[in-house]
Amino acid sequence: MLKVNIEQKGYGNHIVLKNVLLEIDTPGIYGVIGKNGQGKTTLFKCILGLENYVGKSWLNGKSVNMQTTAWCSAEPAVYDELTSKEFYRFYNHLTGDKESSDTLLFELPTDKLIKEFSTGMKKKVYLNAVLQKEYDMYILDEPFNGLDIESNYCLMKYLKQLAKRSIVLVSSHIIDVLYKHCDGIFMVKNQEVKRYLKEEFDKIEEEFFK
Ligand SMILES: Nc1ncnc2c1ncn2[C@@H]1O[C@H](COP(=O)(O)OP(=O)(O)OP(=O)(O)O)[C@@H](O)[C@H]1O
Image (cartoon, rainbow, N blue to C red; front, side, top):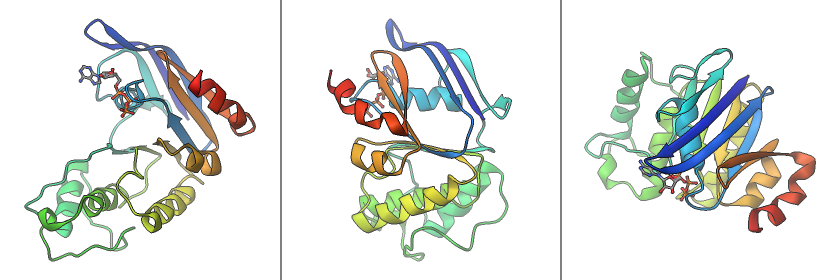
């Protein structure tokens, strides 16, 4: 179960989030939407403890950490001078896992340096690295950006599998995809985060553009 209580988060005098209370008590895919600059990434970073804020977040009664939660930022940093295989090993070293997974979500060349990859391929390297093992929670910031249609389909199919036992938080500007696959949607707007259940999705657009 995820519990988030952000009394206040800002940068200098600029308050981004205020009195945010979220609870997710069932596994599933949960979308996070909001216009540019409203605070989606900030919300994720607060939950993950990557930003200081007034408040606290818990996953299954404990602070959220990288052992229990997978995190993929919108523009993840991969090391250009490594091959994909070396990067998976490097990532595992960071998370304290000894073994690399034999089965990876996306097929990629293993003998080329990452600097020779396209933007989408680099994103796939990072997603492959993060998704090597199972976590209690996944937080993916705009994971569909940069991926082709087939890869997006493949990623969503995989997330749906994970969502049978884990909480999957996904931000995206492609609202239709979220409507189709999410169990709930959170809208970040005017410092608040509002939750919409599946049967309330038809109210989202009006509220979003208001
Ligand atoms: N490190 C920082 N220092 C100062 N201000 C920041 C910092 N990070 C984010 N902000 C500000 O906080 C606000 C929320 O940013 P955030 O990146 O969370 O938005 P977002 O909803 O994820 O946007 P987008 O859809 O463009 O990715 C913005 O006004 C942004 O300028």
